[in-house]
Length: 374
Image 1 (spheres, rainbow, N blue to C red):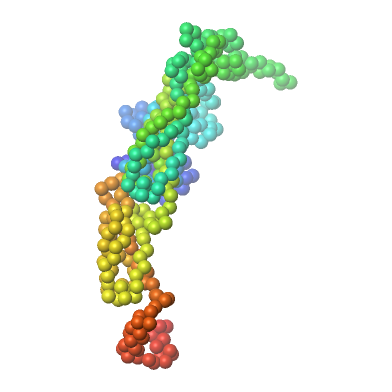
Image 2: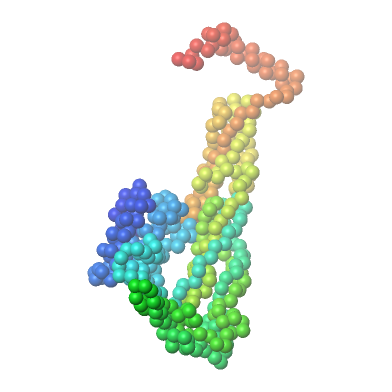
């Protein structure tokens, strides 16, 4: 597995500014337009993956804990920003940092080039046990799909886009401006066809000439066991359809888990509280408790103290990276002193008190507290 910190040449405590600086430096070194080494393209793609991961707080935390496999199991997109190719170095820097790096002027994006569709997000809520064991869920999404009537062209059947009369099909026009300093001529995007060079004179009635239409879609998804509150799942190419034959975006599902009234989760372990009587604490006992797998007997050892725990191994939450491995169920014991007792119980406690007094003595408070503040 790749070490993203090593790829960027930074340590694991690097700040975001240090990561940005390292990426700029390494991008200049490994961009395939500059570096003609056979492995330059692969190294540049690895740079993009490392940068995208370490600049995202959620991704970085998951990567630090579980590595690259953990990112995939948590539903993050690990393909990186350059999986489907990349532009020249200026376009890369403009995309990541907003431009202004002086590589020879901004380059206009070709409006007829394939454009990837937008990513979408869907938030879903799960019950505590549903998140623990996973489940199948049907979801509904509204997204843009390529219009089946016109096959994405936007033009009515039997017609096709026509060359723009304003720019002559070039997609741009010359614009001349007179100022006190003289006459300036510049090339600007055609305002009529918006740079495409063609216009739709007879639009498709189904998509109104857009080439895409809003469609409701139902999907059956499998939510893996062990997802936690805030976990993300990625469904490839289930976002909006692309333009000009571009690939569809992705659908990101964000999980929200309802808190349990009984369990408290910490990673793969679950905690519950168990109230026991003083007699059970002294003598020990076997009691039934509710677990994620149903009722189970748990043995309370004799002499257990208030706040101590008893663990049920392997009865916790499945590890999302290794579903066959589960955490523990941790039972926190609370010794409850009774507030209402019968006459018979009172007599027994008085007898016990007398035994304790004889055993430990009835010295003054001052004498009995001597050892407390040594």
